[in-house]
Image 1 (cartoon, one colour):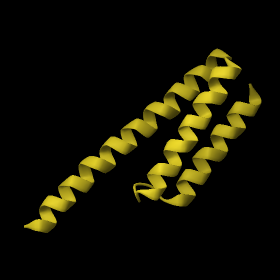
Image 2 (cartoon, helix red, strand yellow):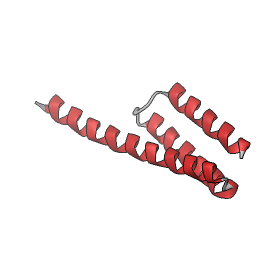
Image 3 (spheres, rainbow, N blue to C red):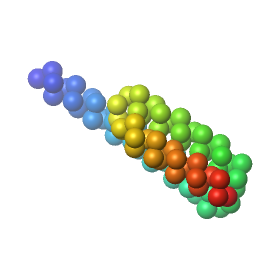
Image 4 (cartoon, one colour):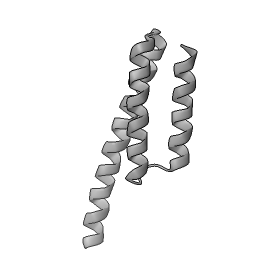
Length: 79
């Protein structure tokens, strides 16, 4: 019974973290597409921070975060 409760808590936490990650990445992408360099750089840093936090909580794999951060940096440099 305890396992069911802990799994449910973890599932809800993971869902919330992934949702905020998607939001941060989407905001960066929208700023990048609008051509707003300063805002995009700030949002890229925010997204990178959230990716690192997700890795530390075990929500996503470290390599997935590294790939996403690399893509964010590459996109930020193209603006």
